Length: 191
Ligand code: 5GP
Image 1 (cartoon, rainbow, N blue to C red):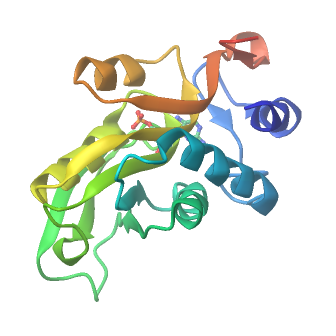
Image 2: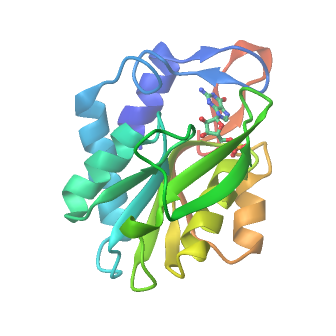
């Protein structure tokens, strides 16, 4: 997706060989027009597949997920990282190891919002080693729902996430695939 790759090239900051900062348009400040394009692209890739819900994880997955939900005409659920006062009963709970924070946290979705009739698209901002995606798949499985695939905004292809998810039979659609962040440069797989 060229508009996304151009944005990463112009406004992304390579923090290390492993970490890309995109807080100018995705992780802190959000570019709504870019999100609209992203939502449209996810919808194109996953249309006509009987998808009933989108599941993402707070906070950075929410913007692209909502735009995809708008295009597909389906609700979006975000897994919460902190137990809130209103999120108490009938929780689906999983653990996720955070790549950026290097700590484990608990994520939860209210069981009210997912049923065994749901066919779910998982959306997230980044795919690194696949821990967040696996935790979301776990929550969806607890509800007895099925997984239609993963929609990822930025995949770091030099990490293991895609291989892990594909080895378990999941479809992975990434809008930008970063081959390398070496020497402070972003290189894409299809450059
Ligand atoms: P994974 O669970 O696949 O190892 O990592 C994906 C999660 O970690 C995403 O939800 C994202 O928030 C965060 N993440 C992983 N790599 C990066 C990165 O290079 N930059 C940013 N900003 N977040 C990342």
